[in-house]
Image 1: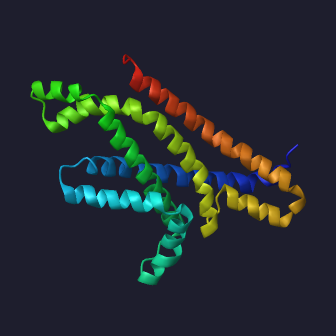
Image 2: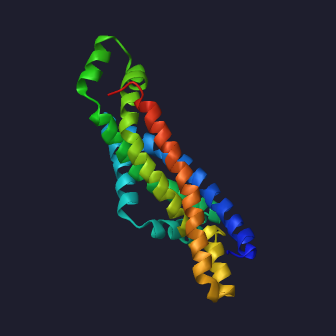
Image 3: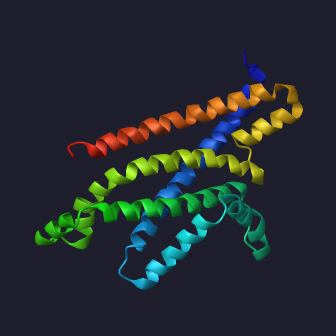
Length: 215
């Protein structure tokens, strides 16, 4: 049996983990679409800026990005709280990966769909909203589901910048009683799974909903 004295601290850490996850997902989702659409822009300057963002954040370590935002930015006169730095690093990093999901999904929609909507005299905005994006979402969701789970697990890195998330609280408990390491980390594994599984179910529900009536 797991001793109840472990649960209060781990529960507090889980709440912090969920807070970071939700905020980071919001940032990542927004950046995914902004950068994804920007990479399809007809303007070369917009494509260049979005490409630089994507390549920099995909090509460098998330831990280094986190440290840079929290420890290096203050040297330039910009101080972020641990929460802001964690959310920014996770959002920017996973937003870069998500933008490629958005871009490739839009490009995967058959050209005939675009041509048919042009023949119906739809504006570019209406064409994207009513024809292309609903079909692209079906393609995007499985990849977004994987990214969401990865982001949740990636929040454990914020413990490195002193945020009292689930992993951080587990390490604190272990320093007080190393003999209970198996118990502590076993419980942490279980709590991460309990947080991740509903997210998986929600993404599967969204996949079914967007796929309804489509082949």
